[in-house]
Length: 93
Picture (spheres, rainbow, N blue to C red):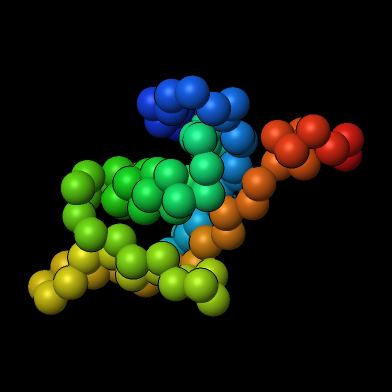
């Protein structure tokens, strides 16, 4: 699946998002096309919320590669990685 965020005036970058919840689910991979790293993190949080069946719920992405979605009665914890593709930077793989 490719998630594309609206970008203006800059070349898009491709990021690979891989995440899973700690309860042992199979990792989910999503390609994200955005303008910069900040947009990639925002898009990643939105994708995680959607895939957990809770679009719009708050998702906190920690710098250590873990996330928390929701709060109170419903919440999920998991791990994620968000990686800029080498081809997006003009480098060959």
